[in-house]
Length: 84
Image 1 (cartoon, rainbow, N blue to C red):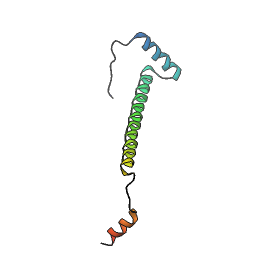
Image 2: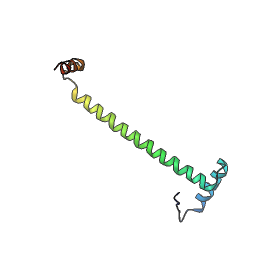
Image 3: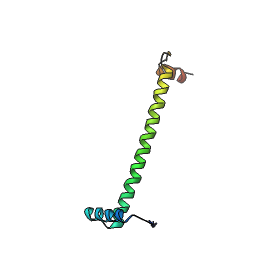
Image 4: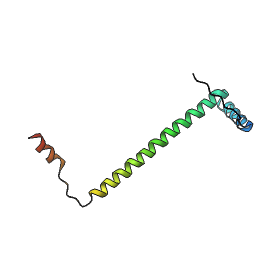
């Protein structure tokens, strides 16, 4: 397992982390690990939300481009393609 050294940590931050660890019944190391894991998960979720926003915007732009065009029934196109 990898180790991380945090230098020049503000003593107040360290004290708050120790308090959180006690409140959650964790060691200081376990509490810091939990916080880091939550931060990474939050970032992953945030990235996925940003990606979904891009997908929705792209779909919206595509719908705008298609407004007013005549569209054929895809089932009919598939039937024609199958009968070739």
